[in-house]
Each structure stands twice: as structure tokens, then as C-alpha cells.
Image (cartoon, rainbow, N blue to C red; front, side, top):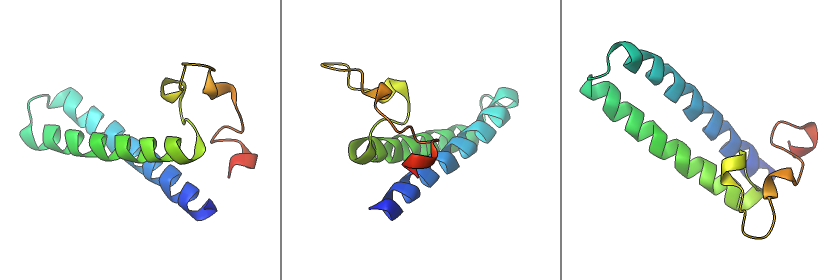
Length: 85
């Protein structure tokens, strides 16, 4: 299970990097169809990886917290803490 956790967190980080780079590109080429298509593709992949991580190990960001009964974001350890990895 620890391996799956690392794989999913790595995937989220990797897609975040791709998306940031694509964002910089799209800032100067906002109508590029290939850039827009790539952004949509990696955003979907990132969303899937983040959702899978949250389902198995808890939220990566406060926006993923289930706020119906308790704000889950405060439950630790957080993904960047040593105990979580």
C-alpha cells in the first residue's frame, strides 16, 4: 500500500509540473489547439490521480476535504510531512 501511495503522489506532482509548464506556454499562446488539448489531457490525468489518492489516503489539498461532518484536511499527517511518506 505504501508503494501505491508514493506512486499516486508522484503522479499528482508530475502532472502538476506538466500543467504549470503548459500554463506558462498558454499564457503566450492562448489559442494553440495542441497546447489546449495537452492542458485538458493532463488536467484530467491529474484530477484522476488526486481523486484516487484522496480516496485511499485522504485529501491532498483543502479543496478535497469532505466538509459534511468534519473538515478532514486537519487530519494528519499531511502529504509533505515525513510521517506520511
